[in-house]
Amino acid sequence: MKTGIVGTGLVTPLGNTPDGVFSAVREGKSALSLHPGFPEPFFASLLPRPAGREGFFGRIALQAAESAIREAGIDPEDPSTGLVLSTIKGEIEQIDQKDVSLAATAAHLAAGLGVTSSPIVVSNACISGVAALVQGMRMIRSGRFRQVIVVGAELQPPFVVTGFQSLKALSPEACKPFDASRVGLNLGEAAAAIVLKADEGDWELVAGAIRNDANHISGPSRTGEGSYNALRAVLPFVEKKDLAFVNVHGTATVYNDEMESIALGRAGLTDVPVNALKGYFGHTMGAAGLLESILSMKALEAGIVPATRGFSQLGVSVPVRVSDKEQPAIGNSFIKLLSGFGGVNGAILLRKGGAR
Image (tube, rainbow, N blue to C red; front, side, top):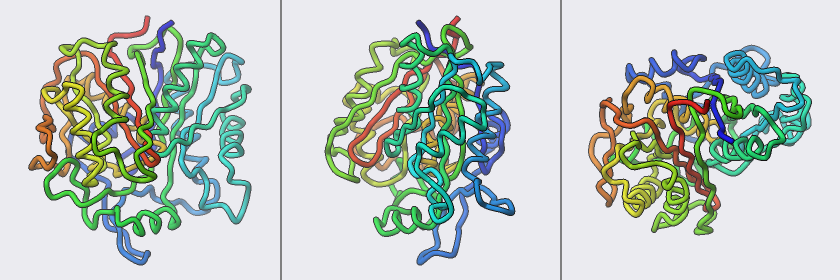
């Protein structure tokens, strides 16, 4: 049974439609800017807060999901419709006002969408979005569900920002993935949704893998072990000539980008174009795997490899082909790669051409 993609939805600081957001990326626009108000100013891509902030997380998750459902033309109330929520922190900024457990947040989202099956939460550090898509694929292949709505969302309240500041992980300027002068990551806010459906759609989620290298609570493996093993699990499902690019995690931290370059080298992918999207949105955490997959799909539909905003000079030990400007794409497939705290790593393979 093939797992197709039949609907997508986005809520980002660069726009709220996949086509509009992709156009902004092609134009080189970035939502990253300097924000005051904490012990140290920080660069981030933040959504404008409307009056009455309560429930904002739920609103953006619902908006992205509803857009994807409309495009897919599915019935959320159908018992064969599943729901997977990807988030790391959920509604933590409302902790003094209500139950902010991820289970409660997912149940509220399911009720808002009219989904009657029990929702599933995936909270697996920065690979949550990719892991949620893998979970959705498994739900369809089990035969229990005909379609699955996968939603990823993340906000960046003071608790999170100050935590990353304490780790000295944030860049004082717009991030520079894979660049020799990179110094850290930027945070981002977004919601993204993908509707998976059995044997339908113009795109197919072909394969996915989650691996843990158990290296360190916050530091990636110096040998790229987890990312390499995730890549090795999905590569048998694609011929190299059909692989248009690898959309990497590309957080612009010194160790992450180096680790990914090593993993790509070990997997024999140094001649495949590589691009990162964090220079446009920052690190959107639970939304990243879905947001970046959607934009990568749009890029391949347009026949291009997107530019890696902020990159100019290679700053990793393995000579990977980082795309510094938009270039033609050759192939009908791409790999989305993510890694995160706790040694987690994930990769998915998506193919243009349909699951029909």
